[in-house]
Amino acid sequence: MDIKLQQVSFAYSMGTPFEKHALFDVDLEIPSGTYQAVIGHTGSGKSTILQHFNGLLKPSKGEVHIGERVIVAGKKAKELKPIRQKVGIVFQFPEHQLFEETVLKDIKFGPMNFGVSEEEAERRARELIGLVGLPDSVLEKSPFDLSGGQMRRVAIAGVLALEPEVIVLDEPTAGLDPRGQREIMDMFYTLHRERGLTTILVTHSMEDAAKYADKLAIMHEGRCVLTGTPREIFADANILEQYRLELPRIVKFQQKMEKLIGKKLSKICLTEEELAKEIARAVKGEREES
Picture 1 (cartoon, rainbow, N blue to C red):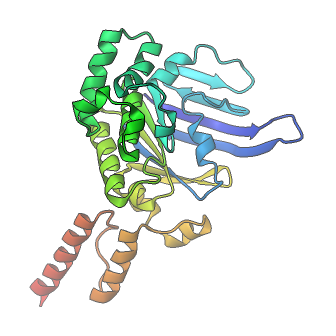
Picture 2: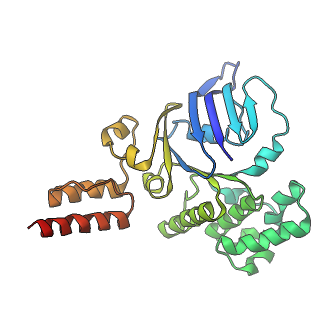
Picture 3: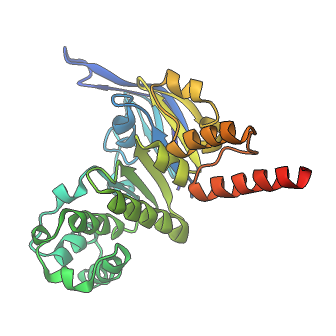
């Protein structure tokens, strides 16, 4: 499902003394099947823009295209429920949204609310609990008897049970330890590839943006100021500095290695594996030349 924002502006409490503008003339296209990262410092507009992806917020100006549906500023948007089924949002700390007495009931709630039969909802729940890395035995437990990391996986399963075509991740690893962060991000990347999902990652982590995303968009003071591939964006530290962002650690390390070996590598490396291969190739080339 394609998503496109055209000249989107948004103001909170519009027309009141508390009016606050959060987005200004944002243009952004996210083709179906893309892994899109939206990065930016705190207050850049990331959280506001993500709520436009499924109609939770409606633009004060401009248009939001979600598949075949168009939400136009100033016009009443009808029948947004199907959009919210196709575009699932995993908010920060999604475990806070759990409320049912068992894990099974919690995962079933979303699909049944959208008209899926109880039998089908249960089938999805039993399939997804393993997919998010939990044993079947947790299905009959209270979600509040689980650890924080397990609760988060249950909440994610609840979103996936809607079988969305687009999944929006709002800082999905907030509060997790490094191992938990890696496991959650790898899980979403596997889902992205295997299910052909359009994935939108809203994050402050340059590492996650570099490792997983196909495309990046930088938000700054409510504007989308730069788009491109991770290699294009992370090739220029000076531009990132203008927007109060830093290079991923792996790119910083690459720069140090290039100084050490006295040679520029052939490309910006976005993972440890890429960097190791490029360094080995550079060193091998020097040996052959000598």
